[in-house]
Amino acid sequence: MKVLLINGSPRRQGNTYLALQEVAQQLEKQGVESELVWIGNKPVQGCIACYKCVGGDRRCVFNDDLCNEVIAKMADCDGLILGSPVYWGQPAGPLLSLQQRMLVAGKPYFVGKPAAAVCLCRRGGATAAFQTLQMPFQMLNMPIVTSQYWNIAYGREEGQVAQDVEGLQTMRTLANNMAWLLKKIKGIETTDVPEYEPWTPLSFIR
Image (tube, rainbow, N blue to C red; front, top):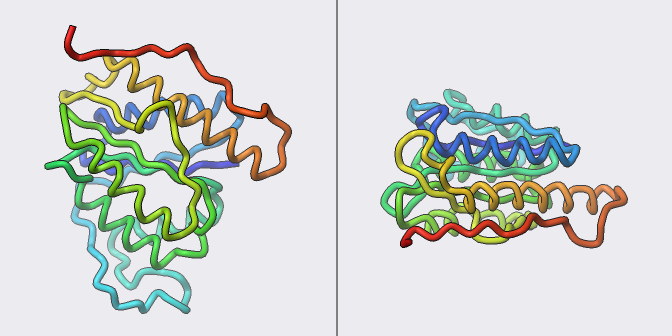
């Protein structure tokens, strides 16, 4: 079992990366392999609805970014998690462009595979960005993996997410739920429900 994690932040090892690393480490503890792909900080072409990818070799006609690379990786992966910082209440633009293109061009490699989104913000807008990233999954019959809360964590400066103990626990719970669902799909014997940590809440007004 393998899950592809996509870091949609232009900062290679910022808070989005750290949140996804928390997911990856927990997946490993559950016996699930993962691969983390960074979207980079160069422009990502948006979809122009040419549909030349449909019915062909399932590759996007634009081959100057990592879209086709991600599609190829998903052929060998069982699940997908997208991670993004929040910009103006929205996911990072390059990640949205990648998502829209890869789900059309590589549709057969995504349909029916469990998926989730993770969003990082300083203060607000995360729920809107989170919803935006998850809506396309429903159109491809991709089971959406939940957590104990929306998959959101907080931090502005690089590394600040480490202080969000509840946010990081949410990432671990997401990983546990993803692993549990993959095992169920694969027919691997597991518990009736995932095992959960005792809740570690964090309030910002003390």
